[in-house]
Length: 305
Image 1: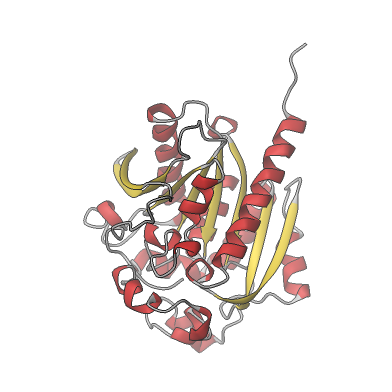
Image 2 (image 1 turned 180 degrees about the vertical axis):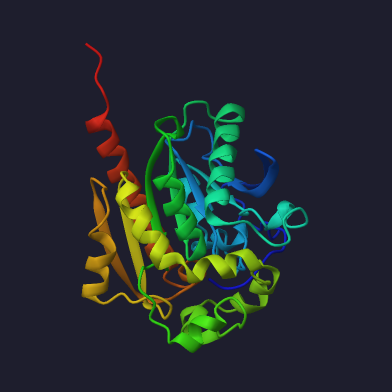
């Protein structure tokens, strides 16, 4: 989680890096803003859809303190389209949805935004969801409630579990109090300038999200058996919100109906993985898992005679 809401940061880039542009997509009864990077001079191999955590924004996936932390730039350079969305209640939808929106309703809008993207930019595109923290709960909810025509290849989430590592008092404060030790871990894990630049990202968590996160363990138990796409969970070495000991990870993955389930622990990382020095290592593993998901989809696709 962390805390946020503002419009995406103005992208800064090295001359040789892929262009990252601000976009808006119709998502049913709302419009969602975001950041988009496309592979130069080629059709995308797939579309990565990145969903930020509570109190952050799309710019979480396009870190400004060090170009190497940007998932958007790295993915586009590898031949993928990378779309980081401001979730419902953030970016351009914040004024319309000041209280935020429940997870199930957010998932409906995300799927609607992807249908818009497929029509406007890449008809027939396959999508791969990447979610961090509350965005990870949304990514899992989205794949659990998806239809085959949504063309979801898989999901890769970080900072999400199903068993709290917090005391009852700490859980009661989630979303209300900014505790750097929980959200960031050791500050030395982040490039110089990270926290100054993060001021453009961080803001209050919409009230409905605060209510939702307290019920996540129970809701995950109901959703997990409905998740039938490949799934990968990553836990930072300094994850403080969710239990990630071996027994907790086994309990997290056991109820999934996924054909492929992977788990990972990332050393030298705090909860906000994609803004730290470990971001590039993490994002390269995301892309590697996406390749596995594409291979799985190719093997299992119906073959015409």
